[in-house]
Image 1 (spheres, rainbow, N blue to C red):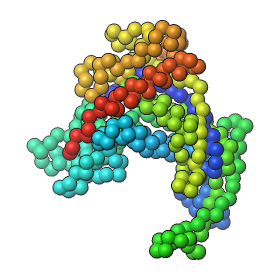
Image 2 (spheres, helix red, strand yellow; image 1 turned 135 degrees about the horizontal axis):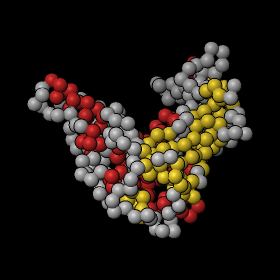
Image 3 (cartoon, rainbow, N blue to C red; image 1 turned 90 degrees about the vertical axis):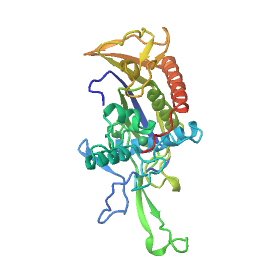
Image 4 (cartoon, helix red, strand yellow; image 1 turned 180 degrees about the vertical axis):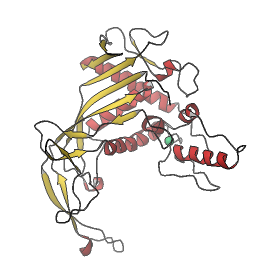
Length: 324
Ligand SMILES: [Zn+2]
């Protein structure tokens, strides 16, 4: 992918669990519960936290559902678990797997096909892989691990879990296990970053944050049992520009990746910019080689509605997946 960094957006986010939350550590403790929240050593003690990878996974699957709805039934998002099988390509085979298959075929027979270069891989990837990455390239969006906010404590609660008997569908006496969860009311802080973003991707980020804020995205294990009900809050978005502004972009416009790429090889659009208007654009602050614009209050709202509109129109116009 693009070697240079042209733009970046950063949004600090506070996540609060409104109900019990369990992000499993993956290890059963010897004497303690079978399932316990994941912890990290921090501030000279063990603290519960939410790994960035868990957050990213939950946001990705939510994004896939929303994009599929906006596309009106067309296959524009791949299935991360659908893999290429010999002689049969599922309609929505995972993008990274599709490219690996092409590389394999090329390695066997140099005339068969050519594995995609960086530009082609990005252009031919579904919107979810463009944003979140695939096994072929890293995505635009990354999320830091979310640590407990200062003054916030994670209260542990112990619960009984009941295994389901696979034969009768009733509860299984032998499969009873206990689990420990983080009780409601803990607050975790993190930051979401978008690097070299297209404007629709900024809109996707805001759509995800809005849905996370309104409780439409659950986190962790036991979601079908009512665990993982969270909400979030964010009050600003910092948009950075690195290096020269692309030609033809005015002071009221935020250029997306497409503005920097003139030849369209990445499948981006030449008019990839958001016009926030003179009043909507905060003054730039110079931070080293970057210029930062901090969007808060009404300006944040305006940026958000423009970006989300770009996201919905871009997804509605997205081409169906190219078949392998
Ligand atoms: Zn994909």
